[in-house]
Amino acid sequence: MSGLLALLDDVAGIAKVAAASIDDVAAQAVKAGSKAAGAVIDDAAVTPKYVHGFAPKRELPIIWKIAKGSFRNKLLFLLPAGLLLAEFAPWLIAPLLMLGGAYLCFEGAEKIYHLLAPHDTHHVFKEDEPGDPTHLEEKKAAGAIKTDFILSAEIMTIALAAIPESNIWMEAATLALVAIGITVAVYGSVALIVKADDVGLFVAQNGRLALTRALGRGLVRAMPGFMKLLTIIGTAAMLWVGGSIIIHGLEELGYGWLGHHIHDWAHAVGQGAPAGWTGFVEWFAKAGMDGVFGLALGFLLIPLATKVIEPIVSMFTGKSEERH
Image (tube, rainbow, N blue to C red; front, side, top):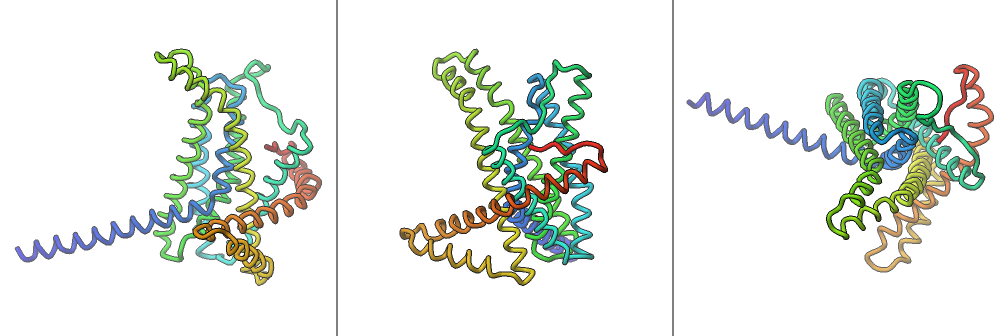
């Protein structure tokens, strides 16, 4: 009997350790995932354009195809690559983060540039165009998955850098949880956004009460403005996260003067805020300065990307990259 009690006590101890490990993984995954907010918001803001022009009944299947591709990107390719990087070449993480941060700055600045100097930058496939609709659908999904790969690489690298150093299994579990959680959050949100106007239209036409019909009409009218707001938030988040990544990377490489100045300026701004608002105002000021730096860097990168890098890519692929 005493042996059985000892065994049960050992099992309980193992269960407590396992539960603690699960809690640690979940906590680290939430913390690491939050660091990738800019790329996540941009991912959610970018994806709805890939279902534009298709019949409503095909929107959710297309989003599901893209989501499955995103799972493959993160779990089969980027997660193992990230773990190998952390194990054998951790010194590469900061430069790769900076490279990804520069890409976010470029993307954000390019969006603003196109807003200031609007022109047709991409083509949207319509179902009434010549060609096989299934082929067009596959082509759009493939393009979305390629874009997702770039954003997912940034998300996973940011998450990997935010995970405290531990054993490889803990890091793998945390990264896997980040990958699954972020993918579900992004594409679940995209599905809700894409179908919100259809839901609103259905409620407006079939609601039993005048109030519900009015709510449905309000939802339909609100969606275009919401999409614009989401794009603005995504762009601001990209510039903020991209700029902060570059500044932090420079600090790690021994060039911390800019980061120190921004910290001091933000602290000074925070000290002038009303009581109770100091922390928020200081954070907001630092985020704003990081974003301004990201915007300036992004504008500097636009000529390099469009005049040098994209022509080289086109030379090897035979086609120009689709911008968004």
